[in-house]
Image (cartoon, rainbow, N blue to C red):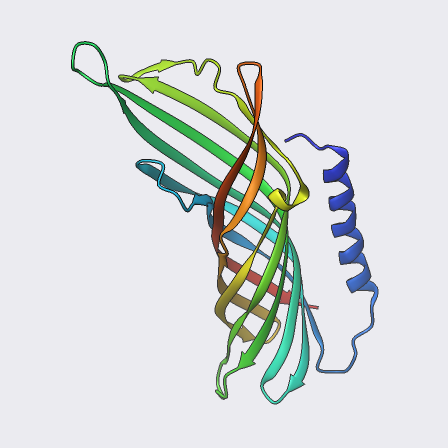
Amino acid sequence: MKINKQTSRLLLCFTLSVFAIFSSKPVNSQTSLYVIGGTNFSKLNITKESNGHLERSFKPGFQIGIVTNFPIANNLSLSPSIQLVNKRETTSQTLYIPSSNNTPNILEIQNKTSQYHIDLPVTLKYQMPLEKLKTFIIGGPFLNTRVSSSGETKAYENGVQTNLDNEGTMEEKNLFNRMDFGVNIGLGVEKENILIQATYDYGIFRTKRYVWNYMGGEAELEQTTRSSILKLTFGYKL
């Protein structure tokens, strides 16, 4: 993972935000603060347009951060969070390329991706009126920014590994390409100082712009994608 100046600034902002929340005093006795961590499974860069048969293998990532809880009404509270999230996946795409002997060449392209994001979900939390176990549901918008990305690509032609010559590169044109936004929903339970919750982030399709460099040439490219992520999170109340 390469850490550039922009990534360093974003990580510094994340650290300062965590420090600011830890340094702040609770508004009232009902305001709570949790340290959280857990695992996730992601679908990254789901394209709106069909690009052939694409298989996805889920690889577990992780998230760490903090979440606060501000009561605003009976059984209802505002629950913003800031998280550093690692998202991973492996994809495999099979292409059938015509040949002169009427037997198609089979080209399989495998991609492994690992990304780091700063997630900012702002959710409403409804506490169900149950006596024995504190059960809740949450929902609301989220915004996240990708701070770094790394990956590996392998190609196999008729089962034999080959090189992808002149495959080209895509460069991001603006910060919007690094951002994702959408809605998340989930449910969870609390017991004493322990929090357990499962959430699903549904990203909204948005059109991103890139510069495509290929064989010495350059062209602008648009791509409509979204991402989604399923999280299992554990927390401890401070």
